[in-house]
Image 1 (cartoon, helix red, strand yellow):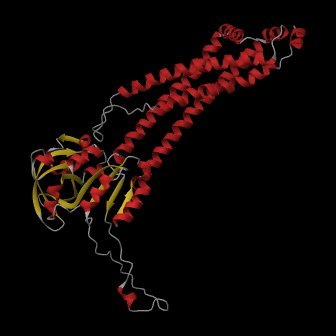
Image 2 (tube, rainbow, N blue to C red):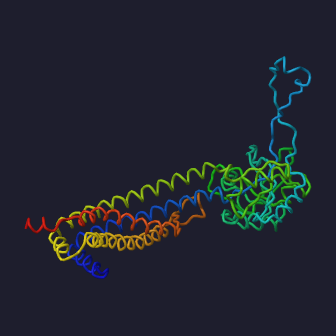
Length: 419
């Protein structure tokens, strides 16, 4: 049998039962549309939620952690192999909070080809003085330009200009919630007290909002120089070195390497934000499961329609086989019908899925917690469309395979004799 002839026969059968063909194609179209839309929306939501934390988190953070002292003085006086010490008064060891030789370390990191960028930070525990009330807070002294380059700092400054920290001495960008508690406005002077009791007045030049209320009610930002002056330390004093890599997957391995080489504590982004990665994985898994279920249901619809078509076309199949068509020829014809439905329905589903995703992407989404988000988040990852297209063809192929096999085994003599 010539392939063109097989396609012509399949086309005739499709047109003869065009209503059933249309229903089957609509089923595939609807499934692919919802598959694309669901995955795009869920992954857009994942990217938004993860971005609130991961985009603001260094891939590797170098710092000095406070550790408990495992060596008790009393153990130096008694033989612990024969006696027991019941005195449990472990206290943290006296460690420097700043990183020793921070500037040479930063220079070495910037020369490392695996490193995208480095941003030093000085973290200061303070109290915001509001009348007779002291509000607990943290001031992050940052290199403003590096913070913007590596962590999109400006995206989270909802009022004011982030670069004013460099241009205006003794300035501060307050967390939005902290500013609301203090009734502070841009241009106001606020007073803060350090852990050592030093007081200083800072000028408010902007408000920062990450979308995480627990963060925004304590965190504020100053320049490195202002924070170092606030603590009364030299300009080589850094409590953290934030590192971003070209490849985030290498963060756990490189963090261990840096910790050993520089004799500091290091934590990677996977360890510090493992709960967010788990949540994203579960949400994505649910999206794929629902989308694949829709496609399988559409496949059963195609299977039932082809079964009915075979039953109603017994005479035509018998005639085809009687005039010389083999079982494989008949199988080819019905598989062509199934794949035609899958390709047409799948293609339409991809187009409608893209259109529906674009529509959702235009719907306003305004919330005070996420000021930088204006519309519902949608991901347009091409892999979703590739998976949807392939799966629509595979599903319809197997949906048509079993009816096609049945049609190929029909005995024309029995059919004609019955008639």
